[in-house]
Amino acid sequence: MSKLAQLRAQRDAVAKKAHDLNNKYPADQRMPAAEAQQLDAILAEVEGIDAEIAREQRLAQLAGDNPETQHQIALAAATRPGGAQTDEGAALRAMLTGGLMALTQEQRSAMAARVNPDIRAAMSTTTGAEGGYTVATEFNKTLFQAMKAAYAVRSVASNIQTATGAQMQFTTTDSTSEEGEIVGQNQPVTTGETVFGQASMDVYKYSSKAIALPFELIQDSMFGIETYISNLLQLRIGRIHNRHHTVGTSINQPRGIVSAATAGKVGATGQTVTVTYDDLVDLEHSVDPYYRAAGKWMMHDDTLKVLRKLKDGNGRPIFVPGYEQGNPGGAPDRLMGREIVINQHMPVMGANAKSILFGDFSKYLIRDVMDTTLFRMTDSAFTLKGQVGFVAFARSGANMIDIGGAIKYYQNSAT
Image (tube, rainbow, N blue to C red; front, side, top):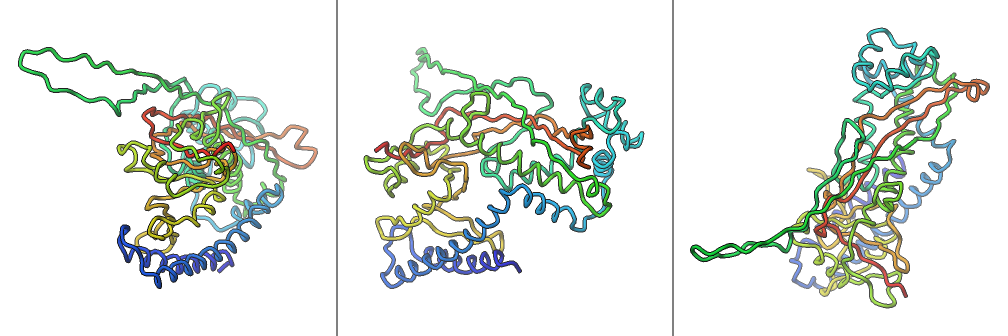
């Protein structure tokens, strides 16, 4: 077992103790002093373990930020023993290793039946070693499942896939304050107009940037090139997606969830890097109960570090650490009884920073167009170095499809 795995298992055991002790008393009952001190000691132990985990993860992150190490990590994953290969997987591997001309006639016919005319034209090029390939359905599905698991906004937003990139308009309306009436016999009803708007769901073309592989690795039958490419695509496309899904400006990029949210609470003067328990209560209740039932918190990990030290009016911590193990499924970290989503693209606390989100994140919609398209390149720029180049394109967009205040933000004070 790795050191990181040992630390996580240790944290699970300690966090379970904190969770059980915190649930021992109702929320409106003050915990006895002795047990409150015990809970504080357990939470301090959790913080110590978290600090060790953070150091280990930081080391891994620093390694991951190094392009050479990224390739080593992906290579390690790609060389693990795999299961039987499907027909679609075999076709993709053939294209990656030998180009479009390496596909059998059956594979070419099957691929042509499911891709658009532009890609069919690329398939018929006389340069057999180059061309585009719409990746196998299972490969594309696995790719986006991995990004959904690894990147914060995808993990809680709604996701759809469309067959074309044509502009989509979603009708929006805020009906949270609208209601009916009682009318007398034979009396006319009152006119109650509602206001409709539109939210545009434009898509943008994302690139993985070029990926260069030594041809020795591609020729090696033990090398799982599908897994290798999948890991790099997840890393490169997933990161830029999550950044735009979080803080995108809607100018030549999607509208991010922070940009789409509305103000729920602004910190008092002096709270440039702090938040109070009362602020969080106000933020939570700024969201209509219709949305609040499914409410979650979203913030940067540095913001969570600040919140872990806050306590409610009964002296009990408002943060309760979760644990990964358990039957069924363990328990997530909770803030004031609600799930926390850590998003490292969220602004950290600072002057005017919109540092905390709360609400129903399913009202944020991510749209992906068709499948990822992968191109294989063997021009002189790569060939002279003994490499084969790959680049992937994915068309995607995102926007808030609700204007009723489903998600609100806490904004730190300007001064």
